[in-house]
Amino acid sequence: MEREYRDAIQSLPGNDKCIDCGTPNPQWASVKFGILFCLDCSGKHRGLGVQTDFVRSVTLDTWTADQIAIMKAGGNTKCRDFLRKRNVPEDFNVKQTYTTEAATEYKSILAAVAKGEPILTPTMTEQSNSDGTNPSSQTTTTVDPSMKDLVLSDPTITYPEVLVPSLSFLLSSPIGSNIVNNPMLLAAIIGVVAIVVGIQVTILPNNLLWILPVMVVLIVLLLWADAARRMIEHREPAFKSAHNLLWKRIQEERAKRTRNGYDVYLPTKNVNDNKSGIKAKYGIIFFPGALVNHTAYAPLASKLSDEGVLVVVMSLEPSRFATFDDDTCKKRALIVMYEILAERIEVEEWILAGHSMVGGPVALKLATEMKPGISKLVLFGIKSAPKGIPTLRDASIDVLVLNGSKDAIVNQCTSETEWEHFQSVLPPTSGGKGKTEYVVMEGANHSGFGHYGPPKYPKLDGERTITMEEQQNMFVEKTMTFLSNSTAGKTADAGSKKKD
Image (cartoon, rainbow, N blue to C red):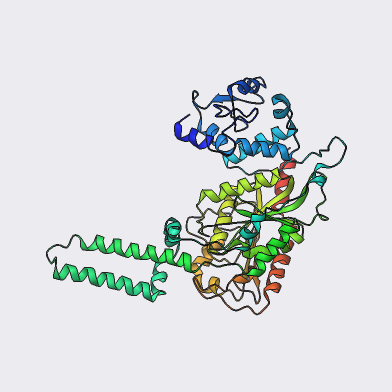
């Protein structure tokens, strides 16, 4: 294995010691479980047979790209935590541990994550303690004291942190309108042009080769600096009501804020009584709008969870921005599905959702790549899609598009051509493998889907003629109706069963 891959794998949590006996600096690996162990324990893993495990040296053997991907997706701590949550006794020997049903399940999940494939939740088998009680009923949640500060604060960002994402932000924005709508930037560009031309005329009249590239570089730097400024100045903090609601839900064990960059809103327990853990018919992975603190969506996510839906709200910190072609978002979504499963939460069907001109395109792109694991998509506060985004026109995916009648950001920033292109990449309204339903929410605006705003970029949002509570209740009602009436996932399931 090449040094750079070896260093990356050995730096994963828990990989500094043998997973089985704790010997420091393990140099042997399980390709199937993505774990590291010592020389002595490697013999025990070899004894399991290649149908169960496959052992290689991290220093002596040659590794394929697929094998390295599994090792990078795994790690000793991740494997150990999964088995512990599946109630595999820690005093089991190597053979007992790695031939359990939980270990087999972990291998399949790890392989799916490494390949970038959707994780289809298997039916969980009921497990009991030796006294016959349900292990999940005996667990209690202890809230980390430092979590309160994390939940109630609004993260900030510095110019050095925003330099790289601001370049993507600049390239994804209509540069012409950014200049025209920003008098200070327009004045700065005119000043640069005047200075450069003045130097050329008065100081270097006989040398014309330098003027154009210098002018272009200076203008690009100005645009880049302005994009960085906008990403900092137009960050949208969540209202205190959203922070307080999330913290209240965490204390009630109805929500979790993870250290891996997402919040989980758990369904009501009486709706999802599952002896093996929490069970939800639907799970929604939700991507927020550009520059919005994802905590702002706590009220909306809470309302959906009260309807029996498991909701995962992804964080886009620190930049609060992503482009649709960022593969990191797909990897993070797959990791979320894996970690939810590891928490003994069973989700029958996963749905992607996205708000505005960042969350929407990201969810749309992921829906094209995560078939058949994803059969439904919910987009809101969006009427356009970036050029080059993959199409769902012929996909077996149902889509719900929700927009407010008072959404000035979407209605004023979307041209007729952009609207037509957006519709062309979605399934037709009828007659296709999937279908798209377009809903106009009367009186709703852009920021009313969350507790933030009103945003002033790229336009000042319109004024709602209904309350924020009414807008979010309407969203939940429309979404739940869509989920229960959608036929794409049911058709796909029926087709697969018929094939079997």
